Length: 437
Ligand code: ASP
Ligand code: MG
Image (cartoon, rainbow, N blue to C red):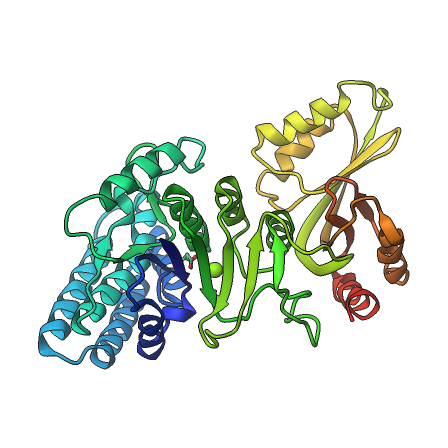
């Protein structure tokens, strides 16, 4: 069985929904994971922000506009009176529910329930549309099986047990439609896998059923060898390993949610990135191994903060790094890059929510300097034994860009450098021109 995930733009209009139907309506059994129609989750975020601020009129106005958009979609998508009415009723119920928050006190947790409506609507409309076209399918609520634990990590055992139970029920059809992004948390409440999390849902579903393949359908022909928004003439990469793809996704390539590699890698399930606008295109295949190539791709991540800690009296005595790491851990802030010298350590973070508290704690151990607006530029390739002096080539290509940190040796397929955000573009272009062409 395959798992196919379609993103927001792939289900973003009646025409695109019909395009998805063509791709899923063969006889092969499959689980189809859908995002919300593009723009919907952002609008739902806006609605809950208005509700927090108690801006009732504004919230009503946004709800009204979104509801009208859905009626427009329905009148184009459905041909029969029966399914037009069914769908309208469903959308009406959803929007009545959204409006019900307006005259009540708004609790933070309700935001999650509001955000969940996007995927609930897109999957229900797809389910009705397939039925109207005479294509048998089952709409399976992800809330029946997708769950995160107290640390917001997926509960693999629960997901597997519950999904398998749902799939074993009588009358389950070959095509199963389910929601991406949403889940229940450890307390049974509606929650989600964070923005862009539908890819992660598809990977978790794929891992739970030990799928033959996980396909992520988007609007681009795969992972590119550099960021097409920054650099011209980028090319799709045909084959990546799980580790290479994880590095690229984490360090900026927007095509895939970084967490989605892990479940696939765990069960060794191939992931294929495909383009809904050009289905015959081969896309990018991600598997355990991939053809070895010196330098495969470049990705970059902006809004990085560098923290430099100069040890006051300990001169990096043993235990110093542990104390530093513990501070970041206690403030639940992941570290991306690290570089040490005898008397100082520099590291980078991208979440600065707790920066003030982190700095206060770090000041016990040294003098702290903060550098904002930095970017990590990551080069992915085969750096196994630094053959052909490949790391020297990376640094030579960057000879005109001031580097603030260099990280090499952490893994065999990543060299990362830290530059000022304003130098990011030049770094990416220089790497492309000198190493990828
Ligand atoms: N609809 C959610 C979002 O916009 C999840 C996703 O699309 O992956 O973040
Ligand atoms: Mg996405």
